[in-house]
Amino acid sequence: MAFLVAHFTQIVFYVLALLAVLGGIGVVTFKNPVHSALSLLGTFLMVAGLFVLRHAEFLAAVQVLVYAGGIMVLFLFVIMLVNVKKLQPEAVFLSAQAPMAVLAGVLVGALVAFGLLAGKLAAAGGVPAALQTVDGKVLGNTEAVGWLLYRQYLVPFEVVSVVLLVAMVGAIVFGLKSASLDRGEGRAER
Picture (cartoon, rainbow, N blue to C red):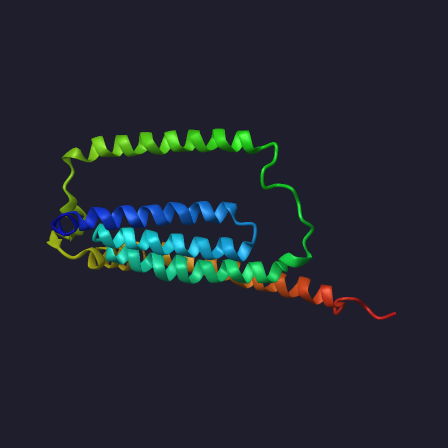
């Protein structure tokens, strides 16, 4: 029992990391798009748990609200609009491009490992408290992010929200247009 108490954070980290990796594998291996989307939701939630372990509560809340909430609803909405049952099945799961995909994955993994190593070496002299100061005052993680977001980066924040709104409205318009064409509402009577 003393081992569990002493290493509780590491155990929770490894469990969440394992579940996140398994969820990511499930996203690309499940053939049913709804199962893939639910696996992606589980991955998002595990990553939010990892943020909580690193005392980044604001990022965990954003992860749950934006990705697990908004993006997943958008994915499921698109899956329902596409009507997967009417699509012709294609043999793309393990195609001739698989060796190139494995090579690309290895190269991206090496690039990420190099970036992590370079960041670890560069951060050796850094001060983590510098991320929680605003105008010389020490604030919490959430207050510092909110202060910067709504003071210095308000215009880019609003521009991104308008762009996302336009994309969502465009997806709805295209989805409704193709649905009305499928029902025959878009044809002129002769």
